[in-house]
Length: 143
Image 1 (cartoon, rainbow, N blue to C red):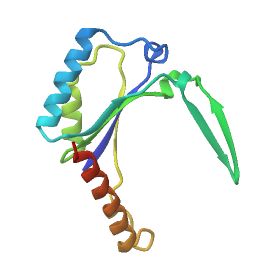
Image 2: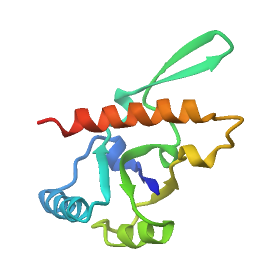
Image 3: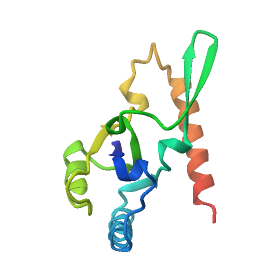
Image 4: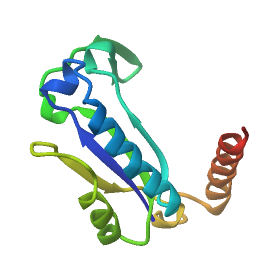
């Protein structure tokens, strides 16, 4: 099972305030532990929403909206993609993360091809999607 672990933004991350050296070191050690355990598939921090854009779709119309965006509590500061056996395992890993008070992190399971009925997502489409994932993994594995 794959899970997206979403680190919510706060006023500091939206202001572009970087964590201190100690926090970077602690997070680096935690990420190394995740990789050694075969849990972490990807993980990144995100720039503040002031450097971002949103695209709103309405029929054929596309509207580009420049950041920053209101409602900081709705924004994302970073993420991990983990592969674990269950939501409970993901929660146990997350409890070990070196966050302090005030940080909010959300865990969401990623859809797998097997989660969809075959009349909506036929086997040939599932195979095509898997081939794309395999290609991405091979590309990522190259030095």
